Length: 425
Image (cartoon, helix red, strand yellow):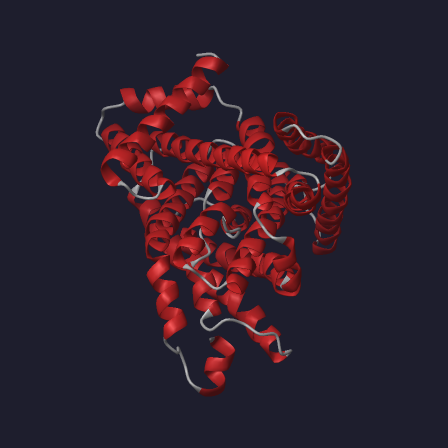
C-alpha cells in the first residue's frame, strides 16, 4: 500500500467514524470519534486475544507503512500547535503572563516527576518491565494538556474569560515544554547517555529560548510579507510555509520546534490578524486552520485506535491504566495547587474554584497521542501506549462530557471556608 492509498484509507476510516457519530451518537466530534475508535479498536484487540487475528494483522500492516517520526513529530505536531496558537488573544495572555508561565513550566515539570515516580511504583507492584526512565517519559508525554480540546469545551462551559485564558495559554506553552522534556529524556533512554541535571537544564533553556527567538523572527518576517498583499489563498499558503519552514529550521538549529511554532502562531494570530489581514482573509484563514486541526486530531484518534488494536496487552496493562488515570489527576491537582497557593501569597487574584477547574479541565489529547506513538516498538511502548490511550479516553469522554456542569458547580458554591478557602478556592 503506497502513501496515496494509505492516506486515502485513513481519511476514509476517519470520515466513516465521524459519519456514525454525526448520524447516531450526536456527540461533539472529538468525543464521538474517540468513543467509536475506542470501541472498534478494543473489539479488534479482544478478538485477537481470542485467536481471531486477521483484523489485527491488517492494522499492523497499515501501521508498518507509517514513519511516525516524520508523520507525527515533524508533520502533525507543528500544524496542531499553530492552529491552537492562532486563536489565543495575546492581550488576554499578557494580563496573565505570570500565571501562564508558571503553569506552563513549573506545573509541567512537577506533574512529570509525580507521574513518573508513582507510575514506576505501580509498574513494580504489577511486575511490568518498565525502567524508571520510561516511567518518567510517560510523565513527560502525559503532563501537557491539549489546547484545542480545552478551547471548545471551556467555551461551551462558559468559563470566565480570565480562567479560560490561563487554561488555554498554559495548554499551548506546556505542549512545547512537554515535548522538550520528552525528547531530552527519550534521547537518554535510547542512547543510554547519562546527563546531569545541570546539563539537562542548559539544554532545556537553550531549546526553549532558541525556539522563542526563532518563532519571533520567522513569524514577524511572515507578518511583514502578509501585510503587503490582500489575497487569502496566498496568505494561507504563507502560513503553511511558516509552519513547515519554522519546524525544519528548528530541527537544524537544535531549537524547540513546538515553542517556535506557538510563538509564530501567536504573532500571526494577533498582530497579523489586526494589521495584515482583510475580513475575508481572516474568515478563510481561520476556517482553514480549524479544518486542519480537526482532520489531524481525528487522524490521531484513528491511528492510536489501530495501535491499540495490535497490542497484545494483559490484564496488568489495564490495571496500570486505571492507576494512571488517578495518578495523572492527582499530579495535575498538586502541580496546579502549589503554584496557585504560592502566587496567592503574593496577592495574585484567581477565580473561585480555579484549582479544581484547572485540574478537571486539563484535558489530554492529540499531543500525548503523538508522543507515545513516536516511541520505538517494544514492550515499553505497548504498555505506555495502552495506559496513555486509557488516560486520553477518560480525559475526553469523562472529563470532556462533564466539564460544563463541573465548572458551573465550582463557580456557584464555595468549596472551603476562611483562609483555607482563600488559598485552595
